[in-house]
Amino acid sequence: MMTSQILVLNAGSSSLKYSLIDIKNAEHRYSGLIDRIGETSSTHTQHVNDTSLKTELRIADHRQAIDLLFSSLNQQPNFHPDTLACVAHRVVHGGERFHAPTRANLLGIELSLAQLPNTPQIAVFDTAFHQSLPDYAYRYAVPESWYQQHAVRRYGFHGSSHAYIAEQAAQWLNKPLADCSFISLHLGNGASACAIAKGRSVDTSMGMTPMEGLVMGTRSGDLDPSIIFYLQRELNWSSQEIENQLNKHSGLKGLCLENDMRLIHQRAETGDRQAQLARSLFAYRVKKYIGAYLAVLGEVDALLFTGGIGENDCWLRQNCLEGLARLGLSLDSDLNQHSKNPITVISTSLSNIPILVIRTDEEFQIAKESYHSLLLSSEKT
Ligand code: ADP
Image (cartoon, rainbow, N blue to C red):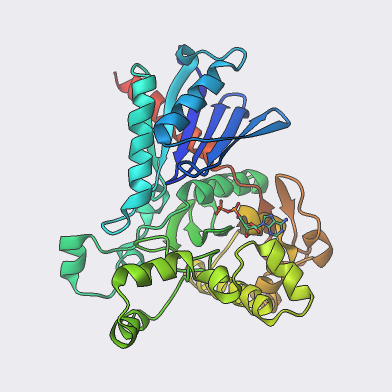
């Protein structure tokens, strides 16, 4: 009989996030983050039940990070590698030009395989949930050969998060997911919107790379592509320099030199114009996508907020829903101040469309999908 314990790994270019999950009891047994890998001082944060432990140490590379993870795991009572059904890896596929995250994910798979050669390793793609997009949503209006020969198309990201909160919302509505339509807003340092019809993604704001769409912590989101040629021509900037500026120095950070929304609010409330513009622009872009996806879906069962900002930031939620009551989205400003539970309703009883704040759990979704694919493959053999 297969065990239901799964180790989820999410390797970033300088971080390793992990979670040991028991899928049957729906619990995170042990989780943590090894951060600033390769820098002079790295951190290891571990969470067991409700307690957290943070240690500072130097972790030179991903190999050392994986060694540290497995030695910490082996110290957990009742943990034994034989009790793992599989190791599930989050893989961010990045198209042709966006190699770094995929490289980190592949390294995570290789190193974990070396530690546990007999345990199945399963890759879960962040793009998979968006495979259901129709061609008129995933294609760009560019020469067909770009798509045929170079795979230039919209892929979408944050799939595990959108899929997880859609399932939670369907349970809350007491309806089968396959009968539900949602607008899902994952608003964190990375941010994306997703239109979900009959439980499947039909459009999403991130594109071939995570750069497109909403304003993010350090990414610009939507942009006129001619700006890039203008900068190349007029300022002689290289494409790498422009890519770096758009990815790491734009978004909230580009507008006000800060990408932590909490600090942006503090500054905005003392009259700082740059911070005021940054948060307004962020909210305005979210509102435009809500309008677009109301049109895409026609009928919507609920609007969902998640991610660090979506789950916690009542100012932002209020501002991106401002004036939308006539379109069926009516926010209860009192409820909006108190989104504490895994699921909170923040709409008024008159709202045609319920508005929900849902705490995301990408690791749980990844564990669940891996477990199901293991079950399927064991049924086939
Ligand atoms: P990531 O995309 O890196 O996973 P998160 O989902 O953790 O990002 O979101 C990070 C963002 O959430 C930051 O801008 C942070 O300021 C914001 N955030 C976290 N907690 C709060 C809060 N209580 N109020 C407002 N913003 C918050």
